[in-house]
Image: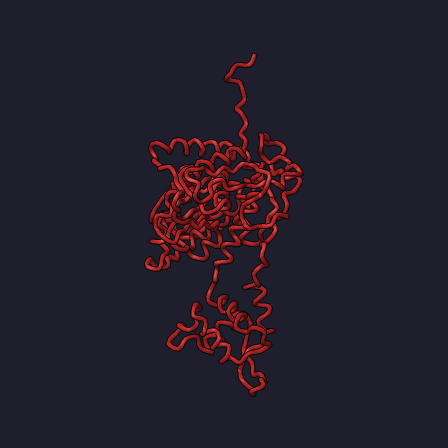
Length: 433
């Protein structure tokens, strides 16, 4: 007869666990969208499987003003992440040493008030920014010379990191992050007060459940190759979170891909890029339908845009020489062109075509980018790993019609957002494949 102590532990339903994490966050924080909620939940879960990842996505929590809930959301992240290390300021050497103590099991770096570190009045903090950029990818150590041992020391940088602050973070950090744009609660949007002593144990229990679930699937997650709706660095950033969603099963694989496309599209839509890239995009507007433009007319049109930086760039605004220098890196050069009014220095539209296509392609048509259907079988767990209910099972054919719905629309006071499977996808602006 089997005694109670010999009974195997009850398997963890990954989809239900992620739902519980989402419910808990929604109790204390009003997030701007369902996609934001999905990203936060999956990022927290991904911190418990760091040994499986090649890239450690950043989580950026930003707000235009105070009292938008960014610090409270970071409290939620701290309460449920793996080995959280919270700070409001840190020297690069302190961060290096914190990661280097146990590089195989690094802490989850949480930086609140990040605008005081990277904001316009705080300087560039290039060393810390470089550390956070390098730590996004495994195998990018910092090298330091140890005079005592007369040897070069390799210092690990790979770790998950979340930053919260007012305004945008450095572009190189946001390019490696899921960006959550918080906003102040509207009238009627209510949340419960959070107290660490009273409510912290519930978050800690969820932390332990996440760790127990994911630590048992490291091998399968390391080998996972989820179908990605994104490319390049965005795909690298979102791959761990989508791998966790595929492992959970249920509605999460589909919802994760929708969130990835939606949040990445939001960032691209509001991203003006660098000054050279902004100049490229504005030149396309200035050309209108012309095949060629004299340099002076191109400059006049650029400087006439009151919302662009060209009229205030220098004492006289953008000059022909400065524009030429900015465009030269894209292999675009002025030429002597014969116009109806006579010969003049100018630019051919055709010389911009390749750079426009590569650096600032035309916005997609209304309706957005379709999200690939979840494959018929999304199992990313090796056969030798115990399979549990809701974890990486084959997704039924009708799974593609499942999604998340927003349960706490503005004006519905105190109603928690419940990410359960529902008949229709009603959130976000993404078409379903």
